[in-house]
Length: 236
View: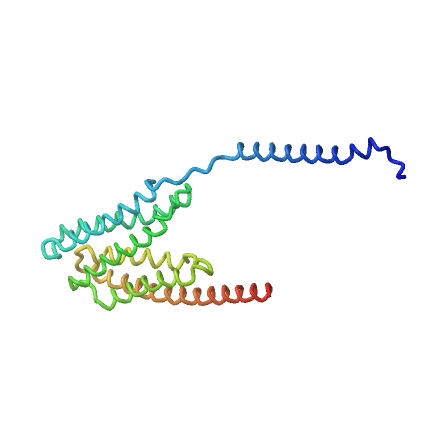
């Protein structure tokens, strides 16, 4: 004898089941409303302004090389045209990444193509200048070695984190662009002397920022490996 009427005892589980179903139905309705209220995530088109600027920079590379080497490579008029192509390429480099981040236009293609386009136009300019005996091969070698080495190093530590672009790195890019642009032009007199000093500053910044990136990569990799070891120890 429990003192609870049989009819009440029989209704208890049924009422509880109905209440549970009602609660689940209410949660499902709320989730459906929230999903319908949330803005739909649209896929980013490959043909967006950021990627178009990157592709334009890639397409400028062979045109730039042709202009640099036209008429033996030392004609002031053709060198001026080459400088215009190089300047346009460097300007697109300033805007494509910023546009992609600001307006949500980041794509896998852009992540891969943007650094390739950067290295392609700068590498083409340096190699042409050295091939024309306008710039020492050691300067071209130092800059290209640094650029390719840092790119490979980024992939080496990417699973542990991303090495952010530093102010020194941005200053290095600007100085390199100005120096190479001055060498592309057929300058004489004081401006020709000035461009030597600008290139010297670019090489110094190239080496200094390269060493700083190496330091950051080593620290990041060590921190990542330590965190991984600590996580495995905690699970065991």
